[in-house]
Length: 214
Image 1: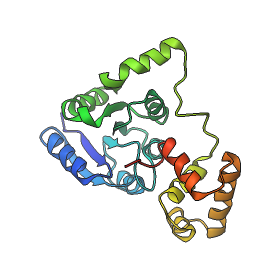
Image 2: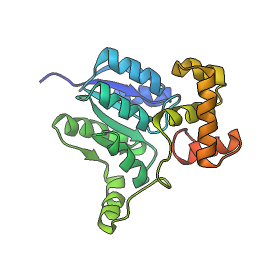
Image 3: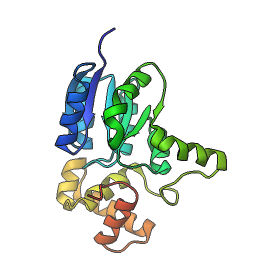
Image 4: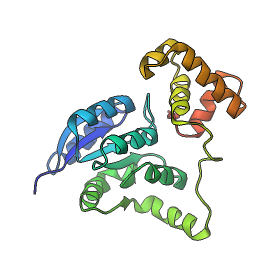
């Protein structure tokens, strides 16, 4: 059986190096990406069997990247490797098309197992979050980062880039839309969320996992 082709995505070089060394004997690591938009481009070019990605990544967060990946590469398996242990994030990841979810602190002992499981057509959830996830199902409490997400995918993209400090012109160039359209989306976001400053937008993005807190 051929080795699975894996594309790694994380915004920390040391993490990517560690994952590459961990996998190189059992997998073919076809590339690494340090932000969500680079991940999308490389995934389209390389068409890997497996993509590992984080929840919080620059330019495009992992959940939104996963949604886009499943549309363009439905056969590619997605495994989230993240610091976020909250069942809300696990829920969002699987809704976006994930096949696996594990925490960075246990990736050294679990990542190969997760890859094998998803290649066999199964889902993998680290035991470190499975207990809380099952509890939420049993109690009937739907995990949520907060209230239901009121923003469109495009609004989430604009919000993330605003929160990361990009100018209107830079956002327009990144998303290939006009500066006026960026301003429109930003205004709509602030109205819908009842927020009034860039600092408040940034705080919202942090709370909802669109940008990393570190």
